[in-house]
Image 1 (cartoon, rainbow, N blue to C red):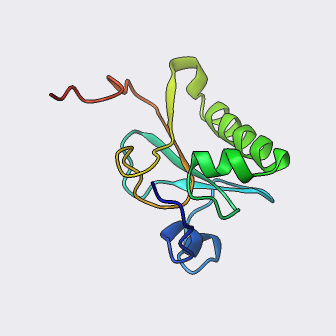
Image 2 (image 1 turned 120 degrees about the vertical axis):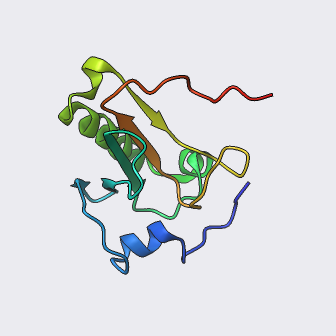
Length: 123
């Protein structure tokens, strides 16, 4: 599992505004923006502004205020897009086997169509 925060990861660069994004939500603790390679009609990335590698790191070290702000932002973004009525998925990939590609904790909000089974059926 990735355990050391990399200040050069793409989300750290976005937070420093070194890489542009199109924010759909921002507050003191959270930034959210559309995924550049969407997998559904709605595909938003929600990231904390703190230096957290994974959901495990975030849960262990983030303040109650950061955790509350993060999950309220996720809920607000989904509700604003009407996703609770038809259903949606939130995904937080963690570590190599979990498919985490960026070593900065983030959640994907996906919706706007039927998403199919949670995992591909593989042997």
